[in-house]
Amino acid sequence: MSEEESPQNADYERLLAHRVFLAELAKHNISLFDKAVLTLSSSALGLSLLFTDKLGGLASIKYPPVLGAAWGLYILAILANLWSYRAGWQDAVHQIDIVDRCLAGQLEASFKSSPLREWTCHLNTAAFGFFSAATICVCMFAYLNLIGPNNDEASPTSPTTATQSATTGS
Image (cartoon, rainbow, N blue to C red):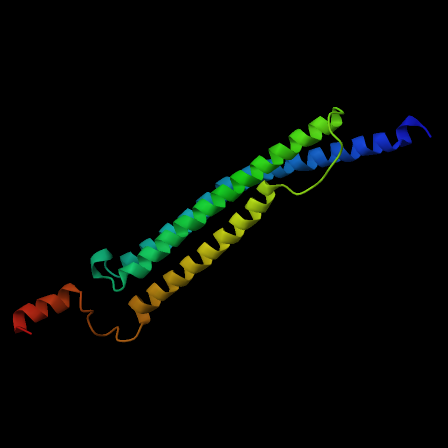
């Protein structure tokens, strides 16, 4: 068996290919980081500003806690997303280090899952859950304020109702 066909050389080539893959993965995760932050924060800010502006500002909206919950959930989604990219990047760097040590003959080749990879999956799931819940809150908020039941009547906390109550004595 020639040196080119030896199992040791095949492991080396496989490790080298895996290292290239991991380096590309790390690069891809870092690229996605900026896009995710911009997209999620812009969407949350844009939607909430649109709704509050259409309704005459924060003082005139009904059910502000629903909007507050949406903002909080969007922030949690953004943070979970950021931490998942961070964990994914750290996992890729850690795996590159392992591959480098294998290539240098300091370790046996091993491709087992790492806790950072598991954290990345959990954080991505959490980010999706927070984003989904926030979107539901925004939709509820829009429904309750724009087309909801009794929308023709002034809300009990609106300035119009307070003024009417003060002038009529009711």
